[in-house]
Length: 266
Image (cartoon, rainbow, N blue to C red; front, side, top):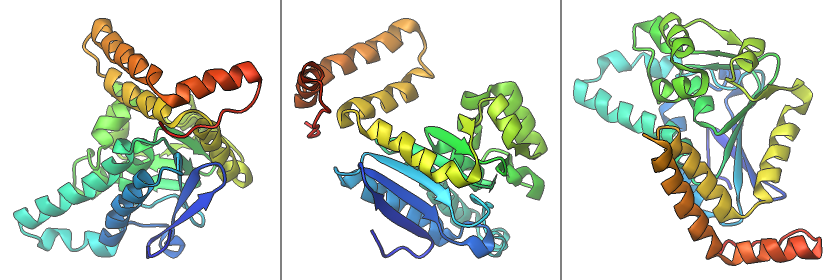
C-alpha cells in the first residue's frame, strides 16, 4: 500500500483500510494527480479480498479544500474537448467511492469544500468533528453548483429543498447543522474521530463480505426504486443469492455455537 504521492493508504486490523489525503500544507486541496490516485486506491481496495471497508480522512486541520487553485487556473485555457475529458475523469474519481462494492466511511476532520464535499457525500457513512464545515464552492467561482456528483448525492442525503439552498448559495454548513439535517451521521470529538470511524468500519467488516456488498447495492438501488414492488424484487433476489453462500451457513453455525463467525467470502 505505497507508491501514492497525494494520499496515504494504510491497512488496519480487522479488514479496514484508511486513506488519508496527504497535502496538509494545502488543506488537502485536490490536484489532477490526486483525482487519479483516488481511482487507483478504489481499484486496490476492491481487488484485495482481505479489505472489507475503507475509511477516508484528511491530514492536518482540513478534510479537503476542493480543487487546488493552481490546477483550477488551467481550466479556462483548456479546449472544450480537453475540459470534458478532464471533467469526466475527475467526476469518475469521486464516483469510484460510490461504486466501490465495499463500504466507505468519511471521517471529516475539517473543511470539506467543492469536490472535497462531493467526496464526503460519496461515502456511505459520514462522521465529523465540531470543526467540520461543508460547502459547494463551485458556485462561488462561476461554475454550476453541481459537480463530481454533488447534485446527485446531496438531495438524497438532505432532501431537495436543503440541497438547492446549499448548492445555489455556496454557503458553509457547520457540523451542528450538518448533524441536524442528516448530512453527517454524528459529530464526535476531534481526538476520537478516526478511532470512531475505524470502529464503525470494523463493525461492518465483522459481517459477511457478500452480505455487506449486497446491502450497499440494495441501498443505492432502492433509494430510487419506482415502487415498493420493484424494491422488494431486488431485496428478494439478494436474499436468495445470500443463502447460496458458505458464509451464511458459517454465520448460522457460529450463532448456535456462540462464537464469532469466520467468513471466507464465499
